[in-house]
View 1 (cartoon, rainbow, N blue to C red):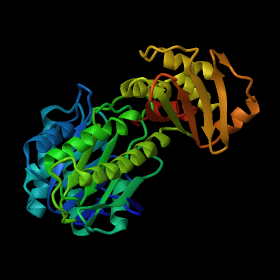
View 2 (cartoon, rainbow, N blue to C red):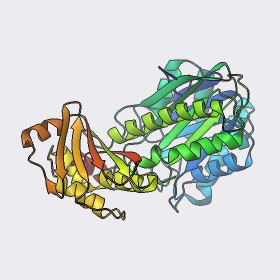
View 3 (cartoon, one colour):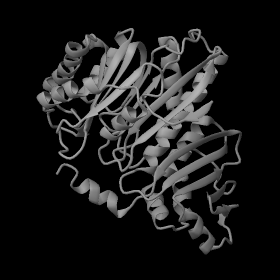
Length: 407
């Protein structure tokens, strides 16, 4: 596998564009579009929130009932959530406009929205945005980058990644983009991710690969503990790499899974590190747990702890908050058997062992916690399983951003 520059247009046969439709933002592009030159098999994972936005309802139907998909239309600013039959109708109209302009059947068009909940989309502006994007669809890296910028809301930076890998003697590519900064606590935020690949793979294998990988990537991040109504990950595979079609769990499938995991984990960490108001990416690694599921639960409990997140912001080695978060996770363990460490590019320090805090240097701990990427390492001393979770520190700016988000 080789990491390359690019995003959703890196793979063969995918074009993208962006446009300023004035849906909410008046000073930037706020719509994006991805189109595959040929029909692509699709897979998706969606929010577990009982309240599901209209685009989630539309996309679940397309992914589950249709053999292929050709296009994705995304808008930022209005989430099209809690909008009833009218909101679902706007999904249909959006897909219909793509059908009218590109002759792609509307049941092969996926849609996604992010932004304020409860407002209806200005559908005429949305359709005008589609009309503006179509002449500009391109497979250039710049077009993919513009699309990544256009889907942001409170994000401070775009999120893209791409890799190449070998399958069946052919070079295949997988690229993606995502957005998410607040209301991030996926359980498959407002989290949207769009992945494109030219690998040839069956719909069944594509769906299984995505479903399994989500557990250790997007589902292991949290910014604020809020699971969005709109969380969506969409993966399109158009087969233009011309490798033998992957229909079983063989060596080619393993290569694809490795690439998928890297792309998903990279995008997930980019979102966690760009949490609203955040100054640091906060990672928790749990090692030597008795089961994989327990390792996941423990790691996520720590990165979801508001008190721990606040301590990370203050560069305070308050290990008691970490121990507390482990203790209420629901996993049974011996607190006197585990070890806790802080680590970053500035070093690694043992802070808790044998049921007591160690005689560590507060100055050294503060230096480690002052880096932009900080890890808590938890050694459970119980088995051989491990997991990692990613979040961010909790700052004053998080409250400021969310106090007036609708204005």
